[in-house]
Length: 508
Image (cartoon, helix red, strand yellow):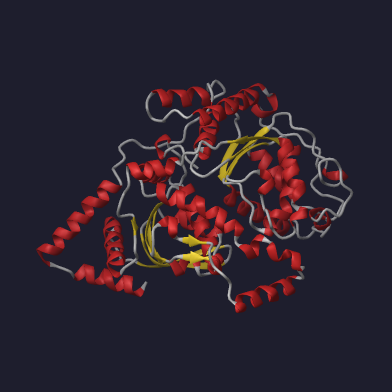
């Protein structure tokens, strides 16, 4: 990054007619990449008389904004039926929630997490019984790029439910952990280890939203896996309706994860509370959009000195609009930790891959970056393999956060996106020894050697989504959506905002 700063200083000193022409050409190219938005984007307001997602979908197909897809249309019909059930159900149009749960559980919270209490048919203890739903939600799964996110957003925007929330699953779980911590702090004078923070936390969510829509429902963290059964059990007791998108069938969630037997009851609960719908049209709409309207200079490969010099020029051009002081490092405080952005000015930040993916960062850090900045520039993304699973996992989380927040992403990489992650690698003896030492430290058995934490199965599966999203993030449609989100956030004075547009190829 020091090299990048030096290049910027050199660029500032660069004179002459040729240098001026080069900067004008670069400015014109960037202007083409991010067209000016005349009308201010606003989130749509929903009324009880909304016709639902089916008329909206068919109108867009008729107008040529979407291509006809019989697989998507079948899903839209099911979403329309759910829309009508919600519109007809009084508990979803009211502002109150009902529940049989209490704010404190007499049984141990941790014993409940590990299934230590007597089981009922719902998979939990007697106090964990969850009644059948008044209105079943939906779990929409299938291959990458088929349109799951777009269809869920179409449903969400048309939904008559007064209190509703649409959120990326990573962001939701970060919020859950924050609320658990805050609850413990607020009740520390009366808090006992046997008290369960999940019922009051779930009650907060139920008060805020009767409909929860989750994008990219996936479980890779053992801490998340152990609380999901209790958390969602409480949400369902409050008659909260859940709609989620995922690339995995529920039976494959957290597959090969540590302590998975404690997670399995959640799968059964989810299948009982949500209709399972598969969307697999065999078409990756992100790839179609990529081939139709690619911005060739937002993903530079290979990451040569010339490519990084071009990123320096792009950074200089994008930040020139902010005037004032030159670009400089910026510190962000996240949960008491300091995350240093190496080079930033205004709403543009520049990083080396090592700054973002070789340090101990997680989803909460990437989400914060996406609320702080509208454009992220990342240099030197290397080719990754199973020996670099941690870096690959962080890159997956970063791209998820960037995509869901509609932040502009410009980078240089060692190779094409589809070649960034390779699962074909044999581990060295030292790496095998390190794995054995870790298993010993964690008290794991030999049978746990096939857990996804060691095999990289989750990363292999999730990287397909990352490649698909990187493709879409290079299209003009994505940049237009990013500009719309930025304009909306700037006009409302709020953090970066998310929207999905039909021309984003209706993909997830």
